[in-house]
Length: 296
Image (cartoon, rainbow, N blue to C red; front, side, top):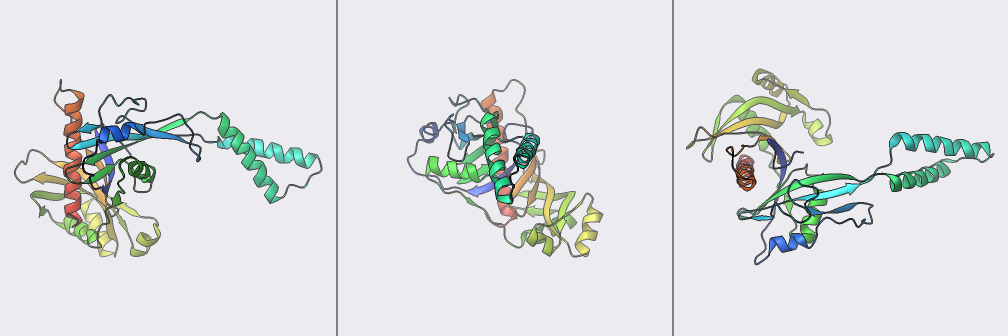
């Protein structure tokens, strides 16, 4: 998923209580990115938001209402083509010596070759941004709920907070269906469907099977009539008091926001001003998403 400093972003929502009397910056600096290899064969730790080499946190960590940073995880992977070739060569060599290569022996050879290739491979870094809304006790992670697990573990180790995913109620698909048919006023916002939805049958929802994506309101209506339910819906939201400002994003039943368009600060504004504008947009969208799901 994209991070929180670009033109668009996506994020998963978690409830994260705020500890009293904690210096957040000091807590983060106690667990920065390190070259030390973990038992899982990775290198990991906190860096400045969106910057893999910012181990001094020059961008800042505590931004008033927000704590913002990224988790960097470096991993190494055995090249698939090299693994396949070297395994075939090793098996061929043993057969040439008159040895019988059982399934167990082939597995042993594969594990040994994999370990050798990994030890020689370059580290590949991956960044996951997070935004902790201290005012509302919410953590926004720029990753799917499953991909966010390493960051959540690091978050708990750093702040002592066990962030929990928000679970949308069973009524969310029904709300999506209503919004696909008509505009809806909710908590000071005027919501409308943006004409794109991901649908599934009840069986597909349970086993994560194939879904159908429709791109116009008439197609969505036809799919609903055939018994499908909306699992993800693109929408726009306009505040009733400031109609010239709007949000555009998609929300799914796992409480993941995607495709959120982020504003850009006026020309000449500093990086912190631009970040706070984007962070506030993310926080407002999270609040609206939770109201849509009946969780706020």
